[in-house]
Amino acid sequence: VLGCGWFLSQQPDFEEKTITQTLQTPHGIEVKNTATNPRQIQLEDGSVVILKANSSVTYPEHFGKQSRSVFLKGEAFFNVKRDPTKPFVVHAGELVTEVLGTSFTVKSYEDAQSIEVVVATGRVSVYDKSNKPTQQRNGLILTPNQKITFDKASRKLTPSIIEKPVVIQPPTHPTTFIFEETPLPNVLKKLENAYGLQIIVENQMLNQCVFTADLNELPLRTQLDLICKSVNASFEQRGTSIF
Image 1: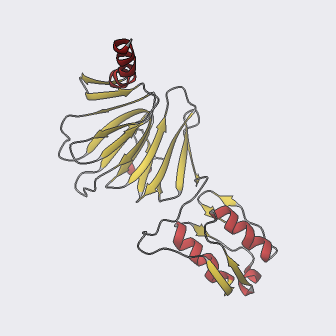
Image 2: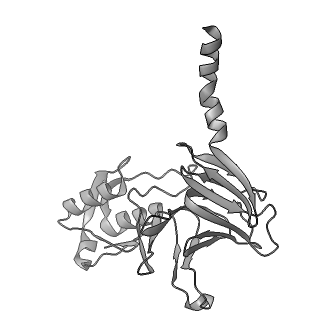
Image 3: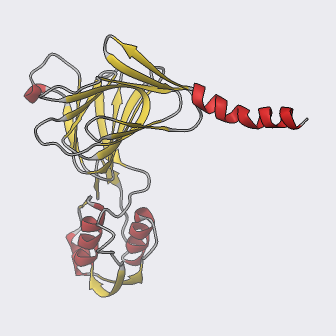
């Protein structure tokens, strides 16, 4: 009985080891994650890939002298070590994501109708894979709290803001959202700087308003909703900007 109990207790560990496959292919090293939990992969340049379930990533054993290219099927979070001399390039279906050093998520499942890129830190260049010169490609630059969706059928890139934007300032300089008779332009400017997003006031009469409130520990959309209610206004998202 003790022997059977010990054997059964070891089964999860055995399964965990066998559900991540590492294969040597003509295109390099391919890692497949068929587990339910993400798997961390350390690349030779110091970059880290968090490979999500039912996903695979292929990368060379040694990166070239001009770029660091990987190929993704499924979803992964990339924390890229900065190297201005060698861009880090993620090929995901018909979409290419290029960075020098930053962190972002790419979601590209073969059976999905779209590909999504979400930026956590830094700047990310996203463009569709085509034979056109770089200047003529359909592409955009993304910054934190922004994402882009690429429709495979129409090949259309749609930029937007992530569902729950987070403050992007370093933890050593915490941002407080406490306002006392503060002019509305100053309030909105503080939100712009904190979240790295553009806020545009269409009715200039609003700039004469003042705002008093404690908006700490509230998500951005709730903060904006309370501000708008206090000055009898409304807001909407258009692309990566808020109006």
